[in-house]
Image (cartoon, rainbow, N blue to C red):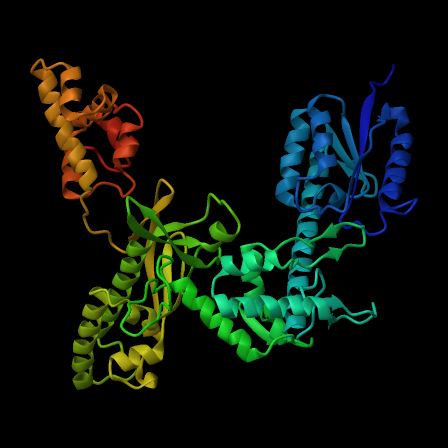
Length: 564
């Protein structure tokens, strides 16, 4: 009886591209071993395919690999019945990814075999063994990544350069055995010129234009592969990054820490510090004004600048736009300014965010003072005095004293479900007429519930217990809807209503349906008890359901529509 043919595909992978230019590399060695195994199974009907599926220089931690994608496509098309690899970690190092692949293979009637590990996915025992081995492979990959991160952190703490493309002004040490940088005199002069230009003009765009006029270029680097990167005119973002880089004063930054480096500085530390102060002042002042932002008697424009980060640790940066001649301020994730679009990036109303932070701090301090928990030591007489000072401080914060808010808030992080803030001990102690050591350390940390409801490109902020807040736009639309429905019921044509209100008929038609919302839902909107993301735009986007239960589900009322 003739065995049915099993078309086999050989898949090979190597994490790095080192040695791939050799005549016989690691991918070839894997392919030879797999081909020999397929030949040994010829009596079972195994036949090696002609196509090669090689991924060189790509990590096994991702499925986004060209050759793997071609292999999966051929499996779906029915051209492959068996995938042969040298080791299972050549296919993937992720247990979750492996489960996806095996499910995809099974759906297409394809199996998987490792030539150095005698099992395949055609049996349940083979799948169990594979899952165990892949768990260890994934563990090994994660531990290796942790070791690398720890090594980089320890090396930078010692001031060592960890490789990669050197910054403008430096070249790798001519001795390949020495890990370090030497100053490139020509590029160092370019760096000093850019710092001098900003010192004179205090405007990134002006510096960019002047740098391009005099022909200054970014760092040009040639990789071992022959690829050339850089050597272009400076962009505004590149100039800003250069001006902010402490590398030029002999230091190395690692995340939020800055350490003394082992390389020679290009700039004077006093010059670099002066530029940082000018950059901070330029970021705080409104763009429509000329001159410094921190003149005596002026109010701080963005009190939360440099204070908050979003849920992935990106800085929330102040920005603004103009609408109908009015300036509207925002705090946005920095990557939206420097890196383009990101659906997960945050764009928060500055006024709402500042008010939310102010309310959280005020409520926190007032609650602690009421319970005599501001001070580390218990003193009833002093506690009453502190309570009065805290109320005065909270009133000043709520009155919109932005300089006080900027001074008292040290830093904070806004995550998906909570806001975490830290207060300055010295500033708080001074405001309460206390010694900094008298402040209880627990009073300096605040954690409050936080919710962000998407409303278009912006986010609506909800912190702590939400107070009823009627939506004036929605209330006005409901009132108009009832008036228009009454006119229509009285026999007035839709065209006359549209002409009288100077709206189109479609405008009247889409908004008149608000009159048919459940009475309890309309009462909730009137009292401001509607869900935070329930807006006029959301309601008129689709026809309003006639069933009140359906309305409650669609518009986010968790309870019965009679009791929203």
